[in-house]
Image (cartoon, rainbow, N blue to C red; front, side, top):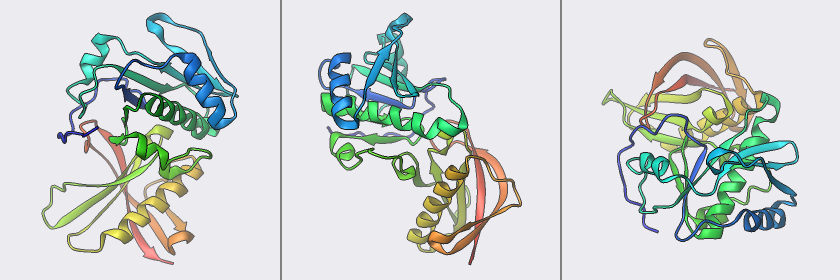
Length: 251
């Protein structure tokens, strides 16, 4: 479906990882389980029907919470944020987990969002990345294995300084990490900066922890060393999030 462009607005508190808007009726849990098991080997186990219809969906030790049909009152809170016309919404949220398993937990949540989108030919919103995903987008993301680039994006947002450009990640926050940013003079090539941030995000994600201001990190994939020079907060999507600014030196 056609996505209407809107300026980012603050999302409701306690955001899920994904919202899915349906073209028709939401799929049954049995349909979702069959699809998931065919795609990813399963078994997907849906247990613990809680108040409000929330279901605990587990694949092995990894767990996410699923609402195939969001209550109308909750859906109404999201409508000002969303750039679509879907009226029926589902949501997927990660379960609390240890740092060592958070990547797999996020992967399971993304697989569930992919399934709901493909089964209904709907549209998913990656809430923290502020990225819309149609069925064709999910077809390009099989999610067979974990890849940071399926969960973290690099964006260019407006800078308060007209002489500079602001590039930053979105999605590291899913893993309990600060986002990364580069502020560079206007007019420099974009491609190298985007590649640098993608490599830096992947390396930080694999380390599993925020790097201290003043520390350095080698990125052999792009032949650069980055230094972390500042910590601050900003709200490029309407929600205040933490950033760590990096600069680079060639290895």
